[in-house]
Length: 256
Image (cartoon, rainbow, N blue to C red; front, side):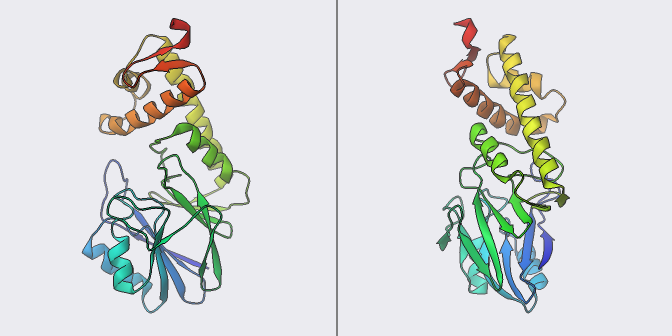
């Protein structure tokens, strides 16, 4: 098995160095392209150049956020292969839809599909042996924005202690010791969960107030993403019966 990375030219505060496009080779010249990124002619050429004379069998996306999926359909059409993902989304319409537990053949290699909602409802990870392509479920060097916190924590636990040895994320560097990485992600989220409840108990009742207190050490340009994660934490606190939340203001149950 061979793995190549082509870095998209979309660095930024939300994308880090840029989107990692992964080219997975079964070792005998059959390849799949994972997360081709935004529509960018130069990046598309770089992917094709890296593939070379190998046989592409599919273009796959982990999820439909605009820094991962838009190039998939045009690139797949140019290569004459299917664009593959969990569901349609902005600028992406899969030719083949993948469900949790499915397997996708890349030559002699079987790629396992793992549905990992939380960062996005349509999020998938792809497993090749003990290597996992994580998209934005786990990123190199940072935590991630979360849409559904309870679901996200369950998706992290789903991968824990499953024999992984290497993570290939959608942004940032590859990671070894996956279980330690997942432990950190879980601990970080649970710590934030406690901090957010404490901040609410102290009288902060809006998402923006909570972000200012809990994420005071984070670049303010990232606060809009932090607000989404805070909202996800509040929704989980509400489901746990710890707060009341009407969509705009939140208060602890004890204050009723």
